[in-house]
Length: 127
Image 1 (cartoon, rainbow, N blue to C red):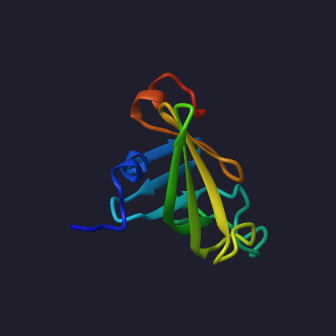
Image 2: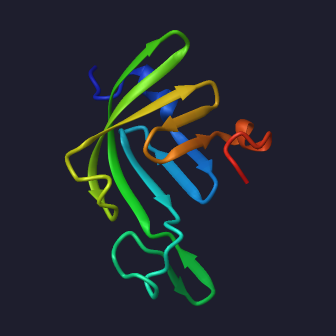
């Protein structure tokens, strides 16, 4: 039996939230981050920009990733994620991003912190 995902990779699987951002990591390694850019397309149509559709704000930041290698050391796990698609020029398709899981919090250097439901309750990742 073989798989692209080893058991340590599964520790990143789930929904992770931060202030106006969401990171969802699936068991097959696919992942998507959505986040507010805080610039409306009506003000500046250059991506990423948020849109208002009806009375809902649609997040302008959209990045799809593939979570690859995970290395665990010193009680922290570091994943290398490859950008597949992106609405944000900061995250060029083909580039790599680093996600560090420490306890209940993932830190993505370029985008901030994402919490699991336990860490979210104590306000670790913002409002």
